[in-house]
Image 1 (spheres, helix red, strand yellow):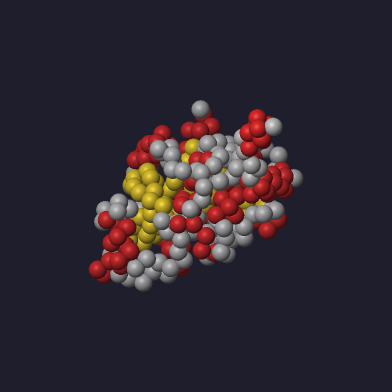
Image 2: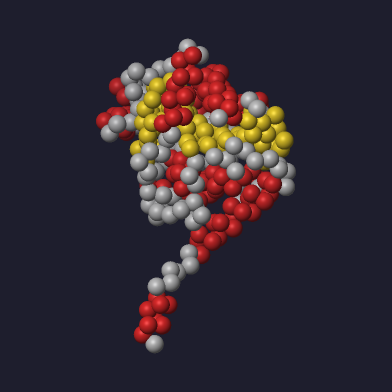
Length: 293
């Protein structure tokens, strides 16, 4: 009897939350599959003001988030909130034309569900972009920064337990979340196109308010080069799924704590639009390299 009790106690308990999340991802993938049959190689998350790149995709399907079960709805400025599936530069891709943020009231599991759904469709690489405020004095408005690492100040994300892609949980930080080879390829593309692509550290905060002067100083002192309100949850989800990740920040304003100016969401969107050609060059160049491998 004692041996039988020990055997039973050694069986791990079923995590009902994990099963529920797996079911949600499967249902989201099923909804997409009703309209899109190809297997994408690359997933794109197009942040604030950067959604125009999705218009260049030879689309097989354009699906509003509201028509995909369990997909969160995007309410941020300049985020169309639709999934564009097709081919870009000859590569099969699936692009999020707009993302969702924690500050919109979503839970971490909701914000990261689209990444897991794209993984379920078959992507092996994730390219994630965002609009960010620059803190490195070498940065200028309109520059790009390739994310080499991040500092996670999104405490709702940090509190998540470790887990696997199947469990749909946020993992503990890996030694390198951002793929070094992709960073080097993107840097080479920028050099050939004769524009600056810095490398640096992204500070992830929840928002939605822009940073105070004291916060800018603090973030810079702890090693941050730019700051934004997204990306970190999605990158952790991508790592849990075993995806290669390239992160690109558009520097839409430069923080000057001692002479701080007022930044509006319209300003951020306008600068991001102006930077589209640089982002386009990197994404199309990488897609060409990935499809030739």
